[in-house]
Image 1: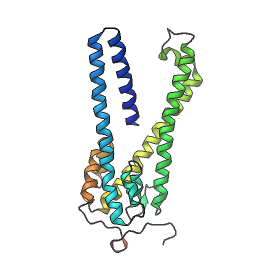
Image 2 (image 1 turned 120 degrees about the vertical axis):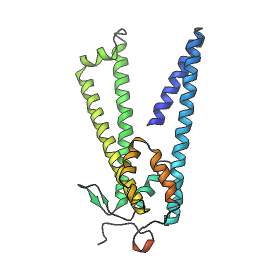
Image 3 (image 1 turned 180 degrees about the vertical axis):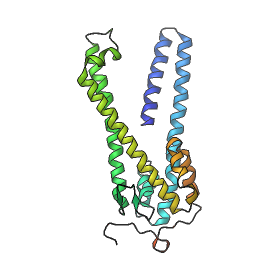
Image 4 (image 1 turned 90 degrees about the vertical axis):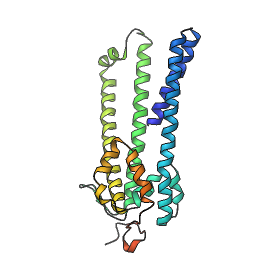
Length: 232
């Protein structure tokens, strides 16, 4: 989501730099180009941090005996190992299960719905506004939306839906990180670290590398055996 946003901003800035350069407005061209380069560096750092955050789960998955531990190197899919590695009940209060694989797939569906909703909302706003703007080019988006209650209602629905998905995604990640910290003996950090990670993802990246140097408690004598709902 952040990567897509940075790509869009970078593209717009680059286009503006080219246009202002053609028009001979060199100061603006240099400014837009400089900003585009800064965004480009931020994008590269984001990609690198995503890859770096996945590496520990490849190692942890291999040690734990995962059959397909190679997915730990795939950004995003490394969450499968992160969700299923702890040998403990996944407890969200109103929702509890011993089958942590289900939790991963629920999280995956939430993530897909989140991205699709954001893309669909952007398409609705852009297409409806462009259609109206072709007849009234002097009208802005702020003037347009109040006159189109259906479009406004759809946008508000998607905003609420996206906020709900973001909230659920955050809660799922918080509990996942809590269980990981408990599994690797960081009980004293199990509350504050997942909470701080919501605002600074670097927190759990650091802890994930610390996991490598600690002996985990998988349960059942120290070896990995995923919970299933059939177990008693």
